[in-house]
Length: 224
Length: 325
Image 1 (cartoon, rainbow over the protein chains, first blue to last red):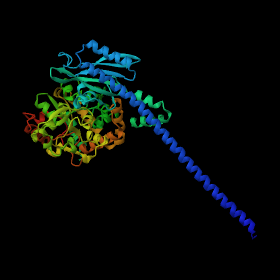
Image 2: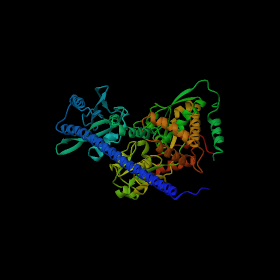
Image 3: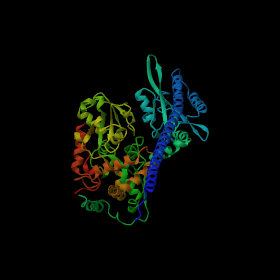
């Protein structure tokens, strides 16, 4: 077996040591760069989510103002049926982010001849359509969108729900109670509502590619 | 218990439905209304429909969607549906009030009805409910809690309750109605810990009332006992299959749930199906589909004692289903 010279041994040793240092430096650089990039991606996603949340928040706050204003008007005087439907129609025409609106009265509060009285406007194929809610199979007094703000005596957002018999879509409703003043007595007369379509919300979030994947995952979870 | 069930059901067929095993040349169309929205509470009926257990018995069953706006006993009374499910207590009360309906099969043998309240609202014992706002479902489901209120001499403000627990979760009522297999689990899923809740399971207060049973008008039963027996037999077969094959049953339940746009999820429906097994097929349970005279008597006596009925309908007039011998 040939014995290596001292020079050769030194060359091999130094070479191995240099290679080891190079690999370690490369690995550290890769790890550090990855951490930096991931932190930036994470921060960007947070910023995007916050921006989207603020955008949604601004829209929702705007939606909330509409029933508030209508409720204030309804307390000034008693309106006729035609005036109510015109009010709803006009409000929907000028507020594209609202899918539907109702002015739903307590039993006999609109007129002693009507147990249910709830004119409802909603969008259908770029048109605003009018309908009336309330029947033995759609007792709106006991629907969350009516009952909860009425019982709590304050405006409320509903949980998302499929509105069968109303808009027939998945929606969330903001409801604002309004009152009649009979002398000194102030009684609940009904609830003004504004519906937002959850499909609209989904489309809004889907426009952001970074959040699109999360929306798809959410869809799958909802389907399950 | 399981081993003798087929024999009992065979006796039922032989006694009141002679010839029912004969091959049908055409299917008889009947309608069925479960008393609530589509969910695993009715898994056996959905399974019977999907697996062809009704068709095998000569029936084409149209299953309608129930719910708070479609009170089963009223729709049954109006003759708009052939079969419906009702709580036993409600069935007895309706019969006592003069509605000529009959129970042709008792599926759920235990009570799962409870009242729930937050401990933070100061409700720890029944007496604490006095003067409080309590959510109750429609008249169909009010007999048990009203018997409970009378038992404890309570005066409460009743607030109509719908299919969700949102009013309770947002503190619109201090207590609410819940079924152990449904709303109780919804509350836990909504983030409330079991130790935050006071629960009054009414069966713990002497109200061991069997719940879902199959009903039809007496006139329907008199006119066509064979179809009634076939419907019960198909339903019992559906329940037996659903409890033995829960994952397959869950798929079928989700199909009905999704078609009706019910806001729920698979995890919740799975919990519900497991709990249904607990109240249908437990150790010592009577034969699936049967209602004993003794159980009937206990429930009817309790209703009379609570002042909810004045007279007790005769067991043989009220019950036409299979007997657990």
